Image 1 (spheres, rainbow, N blue to C red):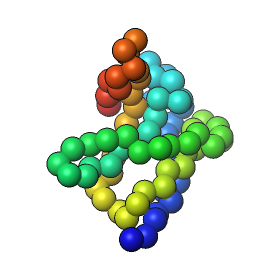
Image 2 (cartoon, one colour; image 1 turned 180 degrees about the vertical axis):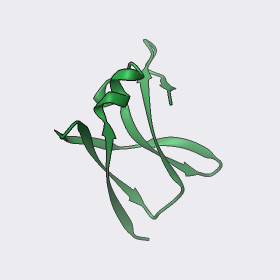
Image 3 (cartoon, rainbow, N blue to C red; image 1 turned 45 degrees about the horizontal axis):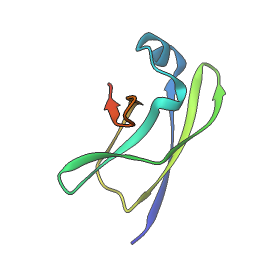
Length: 79
């Protein structure tokens, strides 16, 4: 097993347009037939982009999305 650290950026404009917060952005991994959020860390803002880091165990299919928690603590996935 190996680990892969991914660095990615999301335009601040996209976050604002989709009424999300920078801390709601995360990398999702597809394992065992389902998508689940992977720990994702905001690093900094630079030139109109938010920069993030996430480390995966192996390299399963992945996507970048945004979600927020309900009052019950459940994650609601966005786009």
